[in-house]
Image (cartoon, rainbow over all chains, first blue to last red; front, side, top):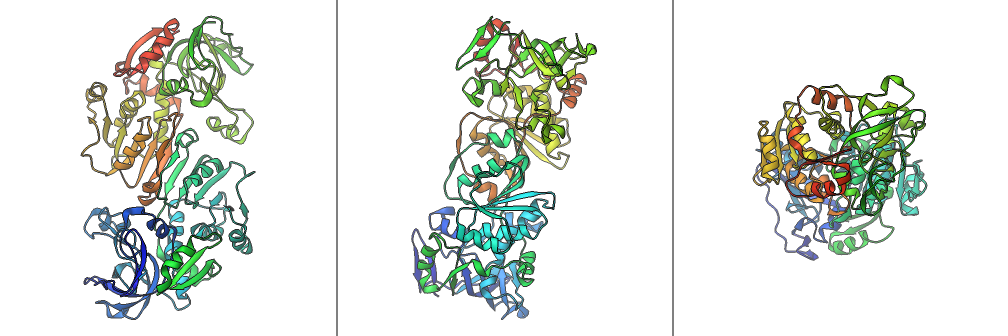
Length: 316
Length: 316
């Protein structure tokens, strides 16, 4: 089959082996996939992953043992647990120590004609969500994870740091709560997308007081965490959403002195993400900078790393 | 007056100015003071502090406007807020942005004949607590802060990392709860103090499973945090108790991937600490390695940094 493959270098290939689903899994024909910061990091060596990257997708079930699902448009949760350990039994396969993660760890991903996922990972899509929009379900679910972890209400002053793909989604979702929200980024053009939605967005944090109850770090760099520390109030909470390939010089002294709570946040619940898109509460369309065909996927990755670009999609 | 002073170098002096209390403060004649890891860091440049270090002490009130307190043996909370800001109004002067901290930030400390503290910072001591024991009230209060921040019960598996001064106190306090406790250190002789109390203590974490609900990092080094990450289970909690002068190469990736909560923890409530000592629930006497007279205070600091030494006290 056709697809993108990373083996130290990302390339487009036409000779990839089609994956075979086991009896609890489905074969999914990918329609559209999105390039995420994690994918970019993977092409720099993050996680030591080799194979087909990609974990944000929508597609159509091509084959599986559940006839009702064949032909359905779906999105899919990306973690595949062992099914036996206590994490899997507790419905927390996201944290199964033996898990595979689509296009990130031990399992080929979405930048190819076909992928496989367990049936229980799949979520059928309502017709009102287009393929382009559906690609955002996975990152949007990751944003909804924040609301599972931290109580956000009208008494909370919240800052979202970062105007990349994830930061712009975070700001939109947090704006749906009653919190006092400030989005801080570095790019006027990206922040303009938030301002259009009535969100208080600004370039840089200079002049902001150190009185945020919650800072969501979507900056994707070690510097982001330092900036978060400069904005969060004592006894406040920093939610760290993004991983980075390198290690930065980081001191936890101010975490201790100011008794900050730092919460790591990764994959999240698909249902509220699908509902938000279906209900038009979140508008992801302005975030799409470009759509490339699969055979130009390497080019698409390059484009995704360019200044001013938000989300690049790949049509399979 | 006599005392120790740090101005890039720690020295014993006899010409220090006696501090003068304002009308809401007391003049306290220090009886005994303890050397803490923070004091050692201060003599390496931490916080840029200059003056009389020391924040763990007990003493006798020499003069103040409250006659009932004069002549009483006291210990004292070390943070002095501005008294006006919202933090101070909310009884959280520990986090007042304008605060001074005894012997750490903007205020001369306890390694001298006299210190001053606001009356509201002082806690009279019961006779059953000796001067030597009373010096441990402040660090013990910092340990009790953990129980204010994290719910510890019989369903929790807890690891205390570090067998220094604070680690040994943490292990003792956590052993009073119903949690499953493992103390991990590097020194057989120090861990033996815990074993005598029936606490499960061991050298190194090799072979321990990554399944602790809570890891309390008292290691006092950037490596401690990495070790904590290797022991805490996904969605678990790391409580960071110690500060360090340097910055380490640290990645927050596994905090994100495993959705770890990191909680910084500093000063705590004095009342449970005093009660624990008075009720003989915690025994700090075996932790006292040596007691030096004030004029040998520089020597005492050297001794506190030596291998095998737990707590060094200075009699004033």
